[in-house]
Image (cartoon, rainbow, N blue to C red; front, side):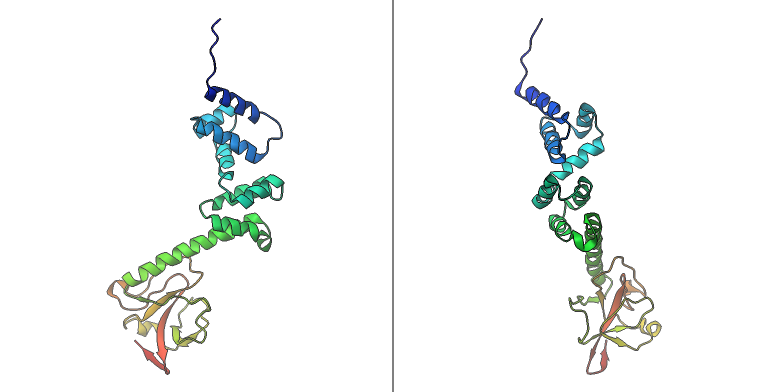
Length: 226
């Protein structure tokens, strides 16, 4: 009989796999064991086959290791469930959002709702940034949407069908007639989610509308400027 001495890596592999077979293994312990096997050269697919699990389960467990420290501690202590922790992994690329979702979960009725709110806000901010970048190319001057809204400011919005709520003044100008004039400016609201244009933005004329967005003219001393 030939006896072969195991390498350190092989002994580690056997020890980790035996540990994974224990009952009552905590999710983070399981994730750390998977990570050790990955470090030994396993792919997620091969690892799943080796331990009798699915690749999706392995991937979800490994994602727990990238949670903010506060979230890992909450999972380890039982203050949040595994399902909640897995929902938080959707924000692993946005750690500040993950921490905020965890900290303010009660305001949303739970972590999963807080995560969805953060994801929605991320998409909104992304669309808003893209819209603001596209406006100058459409021939419009961008007026940043102020944190406190336009109430009390000199800017005023043209009244348009489907326009979002605009807290400032409005210009009583026929929009259809105004389309023949050069575009004054446009602002992207704080909650814009999609972009669309009207008129002929490629010519730099007319009204550029984004998302729910307001086209803005400047009013000074009661006079409408172009």
